[in-house]
Length: 455
Image 1: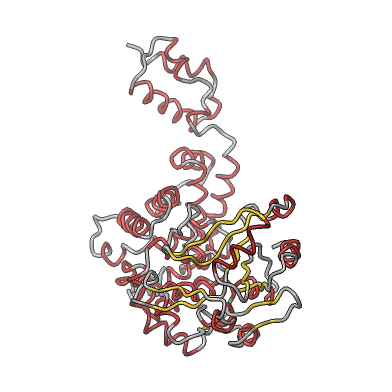
Image 2: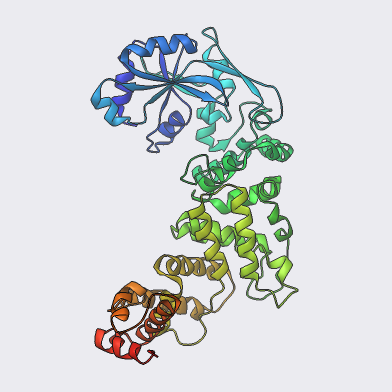
């Protein structure tokens, strides 16, 4: 967040504090953009009245309850720095009225102190504030000490009961920040895991926005997802999020190539994908790719990849992932078993590109690299994949898509073909010829070849 924003807020005449994750990230020296401000000594109405002279003000709501305001400043320079507005909240307390995150009452009152506001937060490392006027750190629950110990501790023993999504957020912080769980935190997670049944699916997986960035996605995009996933398994959170993982836990693959239990193999693949910097869709595919094995290993007639794709589709639909993310992941899972037997040459690379398209081809190779790197296999098998990856990269410039052909449907209609399925079939046949022999991508050769198909 640009320092100009803090300087601007200081000019508003408010007793304002930076709160939450921004303070944590500042102490960890992690760059961040989003900052929220708490204003002491006001309620919702008083906060709105104090900010209205400075620009357009919108109420912010959580499940129909007012929790603060968003200011769109009149100052153009500040509005450019914060086009989505600046968020301010009064001190508030939350009272649980049931098992779900929707089942609580928000109390906003000018008499609520800063410590009581901090007490409703999830973890001590998020229950800190910095007073803008003098830079004082307000740290009633010793979050700074936990940051120095790199330990994740809840503010309250009821933290996970108050909002069970915090269970997944704790794992996300393990992955993102490299923190360990305090012993009591791990125990509380184990006890609280069933509460995830009361959390809406999109908050866990696909996020409430179109970016697909719920807590599970953020966990997978952290640096240590394997450690977080093991904790998820050990505390029962993993099977609450994804019940389909149940049969995989402890499942012996009984293969020299895969000596680890199935879930450990999966966790390792996810970690290798992370280490390689793969996109979220590939990491999700790594997480879900082998979940059908316990069911299909005794059924040689059933392809585990195809069955796994059906499981991945079901999981991602339930977790409300955006369609574009879900479809890309499912395609990777469905085709992840592709073989590198036979010639790994330019023709094979072009055929691979023609079959899958550039994006999926890249995703599949990334997934294969992560998968093989966890298996007990000869080094030459990994070298073979590296050679194939390099060959595919080289052959991207060669024709392998319908649009790469030197002729199109209009050219075929000019020599006597009519619009319809046969025209599409012929174009695909011509593409196969060109993929096998790129020098055939010549208008004269293609039209002569097509003319042989005329009645």
